[in-house]
Image (tube, rainbow, N blue to C red; front, side, top):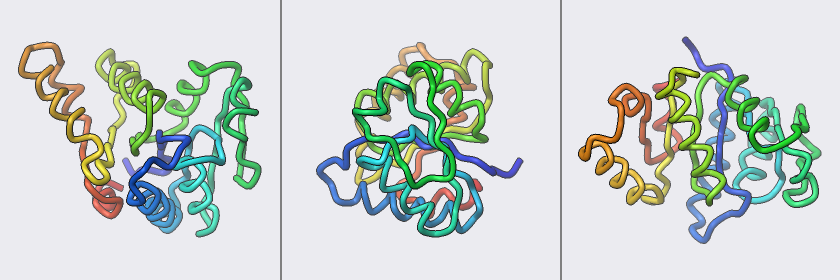
Length: 178
């Protein structure tokens, strides 16, 4: 099945490595070029804002889903195709993932990790069976990926869930999967 909409989970900050912002902007350009709708957290700050701005600047479509509590904190994006306000974080994640064909994880903080592990868990429980991609920009997720391998080696993970996680090092590496 071709991917028509991609959930992107990433930081509401830029991070310290300029490569993170570069990759977010490049990903937005690639998505718009392939007519893939961005579905994300609805913020205008950080990597979230960069990817949304890039998709919009290149003629693409963006759906942001932001919880009511974060309207002030993340400063909702006012220049995207569609902004949906959810009641809470759980509803936000559920909506983002339910209207997307796959998910991509960019660098981010606790919220991004929460989103990654929740969608992997949903796949493990067969709530969803969507592919998950991790953009390991500048090796940002290398240590986490090593820990996931340790969890697998120690017998804590189900093989099927792990097989749905694809790690790429640059945005263009996503193109064959699209």
